Amino acid sequence: MAEFATDITELGDKIATLTLTKAVQLKDYLKEKHGIEPAAGGMMMAAAGPAAAEVKPEAKTEFTVQLDGVTDATKKIAVIKVVRELTQLGLKEAKDLVEGAPKSVKENLPEAEAKAVQKKLEDAGAKVSLK
Image (tube, rainbow, N blue to C red; front, side):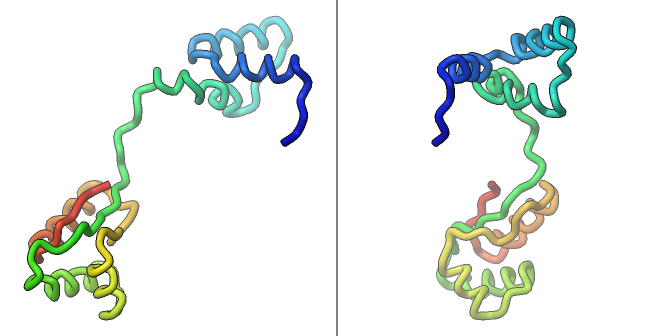
């Protein structure tokens, strides 16, 4: 790890603990008094520490469909067929995925598509969750 001067580490620690409001005030002060414009995203990095709790999280837009298991051992073949259809995997790979649950079946799907995949798997006899 690199060595830093004490005054630099103290300043860096203070900046890292700024609230979002104080970070904006610092940006305005540096612009008015010293003519310093932060680089694009510069203040976002400072605000990403403890101030991030003040920012409301965005709604989730991408989902992962996870196969958690099979509800009944007699439905395993039906689940494997649906997994093959959804993923284009071969028979052995789809079988390994189903038997190795919990495993991700499809990732980064919009909510509507993820729910459709979930329903298709559940109808075949799988236990499924969206992450």
